[in-house]
Image 1 (cartoon, rainbow, N blue to C red):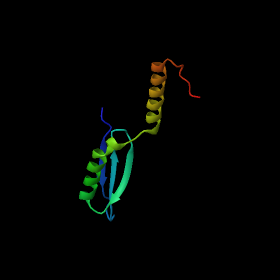
Image 2: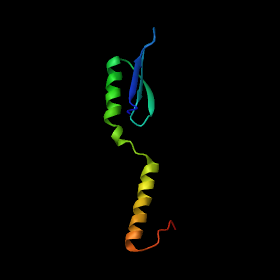
Image 3: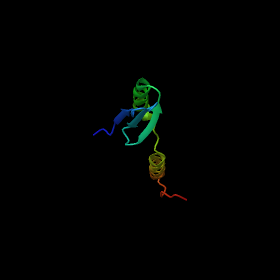
Image 4: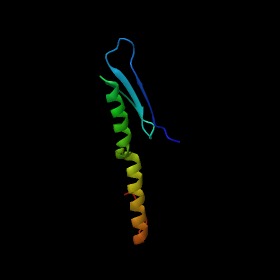
Length: 81
C-alpha cells in the first residue's frame, strides 16, 4: 500500500499556497509556494526523487551483514572488533 499523498490548499486572504506532500516512506513535508502550479511541480519533484532517499541505519545494517558474509566465506569467526 502506497503512503504517497498530497494536499494543496490556500486559505482565504492568504498570499501563499500550502503544499503538504507525503512520500512512499511516509515522510511528510509542508512547503509554501506563490502559485498552485508550483505546488503541483513540487509534488512531482518529491515523488520522482524519493528513490534518492538514504536510510543510514539500513545502509549500516547492510554493510555489517556484508562484512559477516565475507568473514564466513574466509572461514573467520565474525567479529565487530
